[in-house]
Image 1 (cartoon, helix red, strand yellow):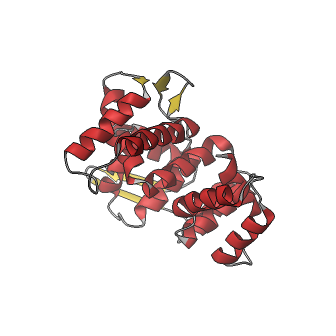
Image 2 (cartoon, rainbow, N blue to C red; image 1 turned 90 degrees about the vertical axis):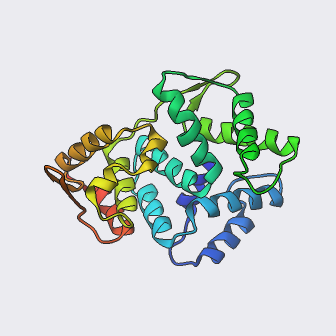
Length: 244
């Protein structure tokens, strides 16, 4: 998470993506011991946060504007999950049912077992070596611990990630770009990344409406959700400048 925030804080809007990345390598902004380590970090962050220019602009804006970590971190987690189908499926397909049943204890072995089942069901690209399964399970657990979905060093426990209205509204805007139906936006399966039911999502929309982050109107089965901006970058300014 610290490397992500370092990248956002060091971003230069006057430079192109390749120019920014070249500068980050030259200046070793992460303070790593080797060039290969810097390249590894940049490859991960590029995939998560730099593949959509509008997303990059919005994230840099929010970081520069001082959006609190409690709001920024869920947004970073959301984009990281979208960029990693295995991480997304792990939370939605495996941790989601656990959460619903009140189960909280998680181990790397549990995650590795889930990966093996995915492979056995033919849901991956060919067979994986044992070492690849182990590394992947460990990397997933580490990432989810960094994002706050798991806590604990030796024994891991599953926990819900608090989603402040600012983070919820940002994610809603992002999802709403490809989902104009208010009802379907409420029922979007990606809310399961935060273990949210449609009822919980509806309550969060009402909270965001009260905070003037969006307009939420419901009349029976008709739900209209509107945002006071046309682009994600512009909406980042709305979030930062909303009246308190």
